[in-house]
Length: 291
Image 1: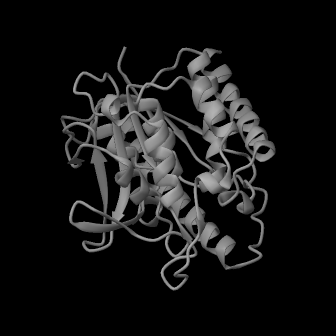
Image 2: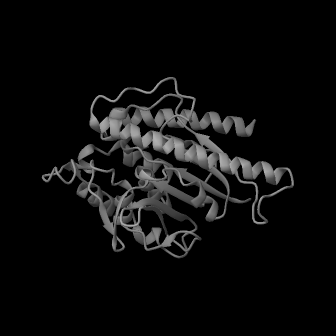
């Protein structure tokens, strides 16, 4: 059996949808060796890389509240919220020693945007081509979660970083470079052309969230089409490069846009509903694969 990769995108409190997907995948025995995450997806991926079960992740999210993630920033000219509560939460709950253990069978890749160089960077828990191998800690996850203006940029590794969604939210290429043969990519917005209508943002924060969602979709659609073109060439016996191989990619995404208001909200009722939705959507994909 080849290597499996789980690619998790960003979306704040809507990341509970990913937790439902993870619960369905783990229950079916689909356990990834490669975990790729951006923003809140990086937090979920890090938890799994540190050895969490799906049910522990569910329990964590059901106990998560907004004040565990952020609080209003006193210097609003820098950002609306500070992520210091999230830093404390990560340090309290995630075992970074276990995550970075050289014998850990799981590889973690975290995407962020390097402001000084103007490019995406992939932090990796072990050496992978086209990544920056580091000892991943809370600061790398915070860098990936630093939504512009909503949260402050995060200094890491002699640079300053924003949310990975700014340039590439669902890094399929990172999973491929890590050796994935099968990928499940989880989006927190509908696949391009499948949504029945996007909600109009009611204030600037929702407008920014919508912009990031649309950037996510544009990046993912391009990466997905490239992967499908490579797969088609390989199946036809005409690989574009000698190293190309067929890589199966399954996408789990909501049929309709998730509420923009959920980006900054973490509460049991909303979390429970998103977990159930993600679980149901993932089960439909699993049923098709088994059929």
